[in-house]
Image (cartoon, rainbow, N blue to C red; front, side, top):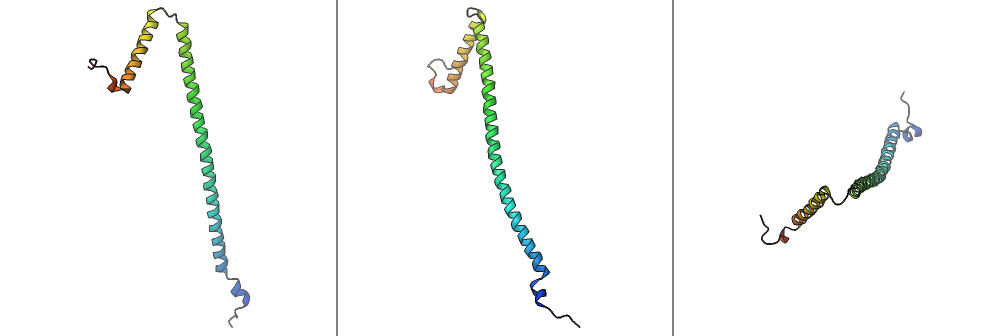
Length: 113
């Protein structure tokens, strides 16, 4: 004889339990993924700021060291000798060339090549 279905068999459907578990797992996974994305965004913002600060500090220290050393050497060389005069004249020529490159329309008449 066939067993009659009881009220417990109808309310405890195994497929229903599996589908409820799958739905809960998907919901939890979605929430976890959302939290992970937010943490990654926060971490990347902090990392970007750290990299930027490191770049600034490194550039500052490098330029300070180069300029300080150049000024120290320039001040230690006696001013009245041909080497210093060559540096001065070369520096002036470089500044003039830079100014001409920045403002090509400001060339004086008769100096075009």
